[in-house]
Length: 474
Image (cartoon, rainbow, N blue to C red):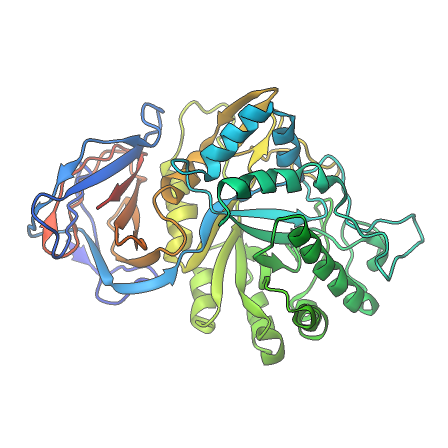
């Protein structure tokens, strides 16, 4: 039985319907030449297929009863990129690899024929995935440095910066998002890198600190495309961390950071919020002030709390501003032998894109087998890397394949287009700059499914196993 049940962010007139047992995708291309083929790449829970190319399927005449409808005439957001957080701990582990193995990993991530990583997130100073907490201008207890004479990229000059340089040599188009976990302790109300708030008297000093970081990264050969003002501004529990209310972020951007960036004509763009989907009111508070909003390109979200449709809510409230999915941890369940690929591809990749996000950045690129390095008393002890690095051995985990299933086929500049969904199956569609149509499908049901899919006047047939994800290109 057919019923209306289109998710938010999906154009009117598209329908979602229940289907049967096998997943058979009938994809149609209006005006497609006779004999054109559809290619597919499959990842299965038992790891028998890991982004494995499938036999091509020829397009044929359309049939009635299509369940997924792809409509390239209805365009949504432009994709800016997919990737991971390159934490200090990630870079430290990568720098310990033999050079040839490190370069091989970097080429697998960002090189031609790799998995398509096009955006990475780095911290300003340390994150909680460093072996200790620090900023770019730490001084002795009780001291201060209002002129920032002691500012330095510090330890990242031997870890994060070299890795980024190497990755950008492979792909100069690689984008970078910067996020601070804390201001220097001497700028904070509690004189500590954990918790506390930014002293109002130090708003202008902190603005110069962030500008100085952006300029230092550019001089180091790693220009920063976007920056947030605070990672998880409502979370005081990480080490490091800092609370910044919506009103404080509004005032800081409007009165200090925005003017400071404008004065030096820096090209980096500001993304607001950078926290969970349970508070879409946070960026709305900032964007409601026109004098602050003019400095922001959009809002960033995580998914540890709340629902992804909060991003659609933010988009509908301020459609001229972008939506960015800036962090989410995706890990294998402890002791799991199967690769539960359909769940995160459906939730993080497809879900974020169907709710207007321009990016999906997962946490975090690399960790060791004990989920380190991380800080004490507030670092993440369960954060599995997209890859695990032990000595000179690199193994690939759930987050790696989750990003790869989309990023490898959807380069920056691609545009999301309308597509319907069917029960038990999630999907999202894109048209690339090369005019290729890409459909990503995650079968979250407990059986193989048959789903006809229509895109104009022609179809093809494919099967996707239970719990699997497959990407189709034509």
